[in-house]
Length: 570
Image (cartoon, rainbow, N blue to C red; front, top):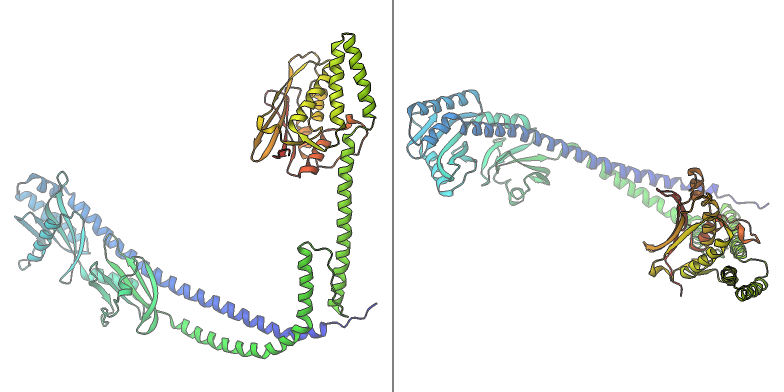
């Protein structure tokens, strides 16, 4: 027994490699944790922004609903549709506006302008300047717009909705909600502002509507990058030279945006510092260990790489290679083991090739009758001539068909065309007509493009014989029939043998469909060539995905489906 110089003594030196693995894991886990912490921080602030947005949207949606109900109030509709000023209707409108202002804290005042002859402002105020509101009214007249509009004018938030004739789309009035600035501002700062956060709302013209904190120059923050942000999204940028997250969200049914400037949390900056120091330590450790790793490469890695290349060549199909590595350690033992395995694989491969050749040879022997076909053929020719001379046509017809079957049998080719196989079946049926007392009819529906397809010899005859002897068992019936149908489907030749016989039991059908391609023992009698033999020969010659399939017909009888590759006889 060889004495091995174990490499286990060297293995402990690889403990330094474990340090590298641990360091690599530290880097990976640290990087994953940093990214996760950053994502959580971003997600947290996005949720805060969404909360602020939802609270503001609730107010805006409520105002939109209030405006809709106001425009469709009976007093408004009656006044605008009559075309005549009525004091009592004006009184009803003013009472309606007072009720809305009293019950909705977000609305501080309502203005109503009808054409150029009526202006109403609730709560009433003698010193109110109506010029800005008429300016808005005339802008609607000129623009022809029928959409609700949010405006920020003279530090006032205004929600405007036009009144128009739905029939001819003629504009004739305007309702303006003057929004309670303190109420909106309270909701704005209490729900979204965190320490060091900066937030603002801008209108479609990039005018600042609300902002917090107040001691900030927001105009310097609204650069082109911020203003061109998508309506609902975020970017990573800087705020006063420090990393920051900028979030933008569009408000409900407005062209206004809520924008937040969020400094990256200081916890992330501390983690970055620790992470950076760890990287420097790992680089130093890698440098120390690297030198010794180069030494180990020559003693261990190189022979392993050689053995790996031998295995790759074997995997590629080269079974006649061997390992020339000679060492007195575990690697040398592995080299000898590989050579032993390769020798066993080569022996098994050779044996399997011999077995396959023997199977094919035995199958071919099964197909060839071992009686003297020449003697029988010549004798039958003499019988045929005597029958013709004596006028016994049926004997001549039967002899002629049997001669054709024998001539077909004498051919040593393993395969033939479907057309030739069908002719042999027809000759076989002529013989059977005089052998059996059961009456039956047959029909051949052979597609023109399948006649020259390659099939196996004596493939159909066992199936027809099985149908006659096992399917046509009732001698009193005179309507038995079978037909052979061929077609091409999905690059495959499909042949179906369909009969109206007694059919097969379900358990027998299932067993037939599950039978394996194991050929029967070679026999010297053609009568023992059965269904299993046909299945085995098809799969041995064409492959496992081809063969026979059995089905019970809906009317009666059985269908045997044969699937073969679509190949034209050359």
